[in-house]
Image 1 (tube, rainbow, N blue to C red):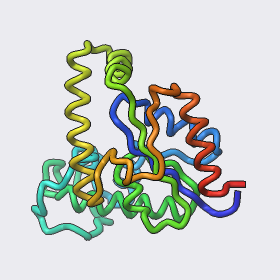
Image 2 (image 1 turned 90 degrees about the horizontal axis):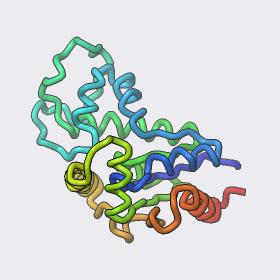
Image 3 (image 1 turned 180 degrees about the vertical axis):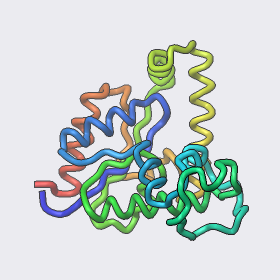
Image 4 (image 1 turned 135 degrees about the horizontal axis):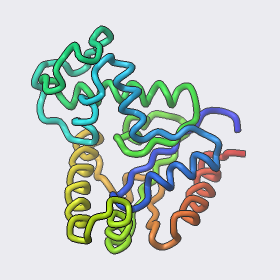
Length: 210
């Protein structure tokens, strides 16, 4: 395969989006990034990881410190308390720079974090959204976290609200809407393994990976 390409995956909580992304990356022989981006953004900026964990996929809470667009190369972990007034916008900017840098140097699968919007000018990208039935999402979360259905449903409602607010705020598009992506897939219809193969086939054809 010649030339770098990226696959950006949006997903509903409990849809298996992370697992699908990992398996897709493994099948294609490219790198996978989800929570790893938090560590990379922390290393790149010199800010402690907790800043990024608290802001992870959350919409802006306002420009508090006037820090948007600035870089923080000299702030090491522990130099600033983690409740310092850094805006989510500033942290989004740092994480965006990391995503762009990774996409420029190699082929990747990114999960969440507005990667499709951040890489909207990338010449070779495929943007995918993965959903699933509510029943399957609840069952998956119950098994993963050893919780009951009521707690799982509450997790889903909060995650959907948080992710949609985050995505809509930064991308000016609509999270989960078909027009926002190149492909939308219901993982309940095919199961995880067949969903991976289906997305792989689509990506290979769209990006002409020969």
